[in-house]
Image 1 (tube, rainbow, N blue to C red):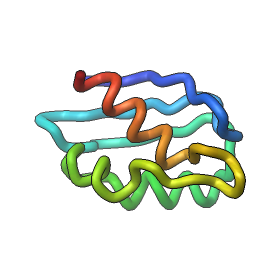
Image 2 (image 1 turned 120 degrees about the vertical axis):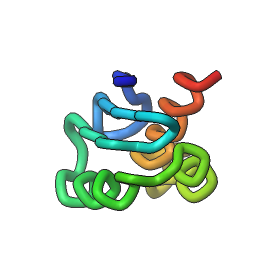
Image 3 (image 1 turned 90 degrees about the vertical axis):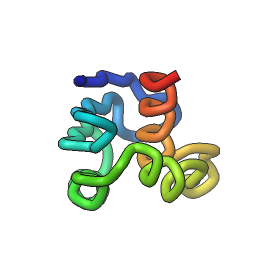
Image 4 (image 1 turned 180 degrees about the horizontal axis):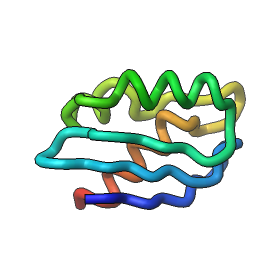
Length: 81
């Protein structure tokens, strides 16, 4: 399954997530802080969706009420309702 999610409230504008059997296979962000987002993508690769949600949901970026990791969780929650 490939999820395309338009982010809100972050410097990144889109996230493409590949999920297979509940496991994150790949994550690609458009825009945002390239190095940090490559790091997030590498760290979640191979993780279970529920583990990613547990670790990253609710993270804020400075004074913003969301972040790129939090937007990843919102995308996953939307896809797996």
